[in-house]
Length: 357
Image 1 (spheres, one colour):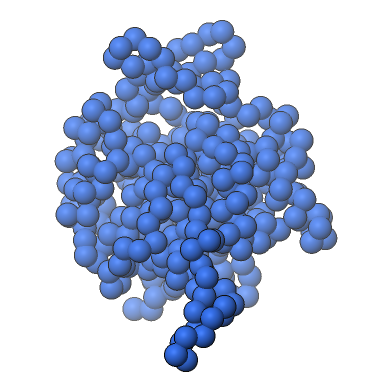
Image 2 (cartoon, rainbow, N blue to C red):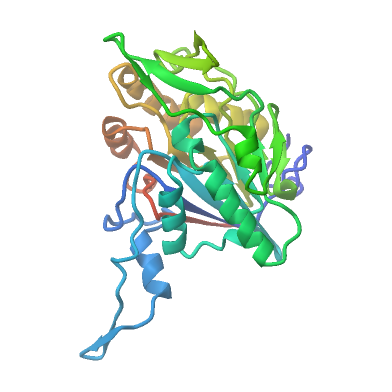
């Protein structure tokens, strides 16, 4: 691809440069709507969004009062991110992962006033229940909303074709920590979505978004998830690399390319290096998602990850969440704050607007 600031507004592979992108976190492990946001970080806390749309309920000494704290989202172990891109007068909306529990996703979407009918595509990053578990119910809810709105086109559900039945992690104790079984293709399709399977890189939403294929493993320290196993039927196998993991990239004019990396089992640096290969000579904007640096087996990777992000990747903003872990977040904040650190939390909105030279 060719995607420099002086290049045409579409790459050779059909990815379009957008005028604006809004990235809304619907599910994440943490809630934090009170911390201040540093100047230059394009992040809007959840409570500020509620304030702008709630009616006045009390006037005190001439000041308007609004009730917002009964609308705050609930956090849980998982990730789901809504991405809306705008190019001229056209907008496209993609849902990246759905988290584990349909009630959490649906309640958070209601609290954030998400227009379900606007969602055209649901993209699953990888087959892990904390990202995929709510798929059947969420797809059904979106399909019903689109039908009520009179939209004929069904929501596209973009999945990796290599679906496992179940996954888990073998602990040093010898016990297997199992995730629940993955939703089946027929369960997902029964809600009215149109399943599209992709193992290779491709455009999404008419070129508004880019979905990756397998992520190349380049660094010597990002070696997958220790102890991870995949089950199909009664057969299990060690599967530390989780090669079905994919990311989504969004290119906003002048700002660069934002990457959504759900768990970074491939390594967040490897994911960013892949983006750089796909979009050469283009800076990385926001790097959002789980960096998977939590746990004793993963924490030795914190220092080389922070080093390479700071020296090789140079993102405008790091936005770690989900499975990153507090130790890694502390190191990332120490390195990238104040102007380049905006951590992911449920209800957070990242508003990216095109920049001119």
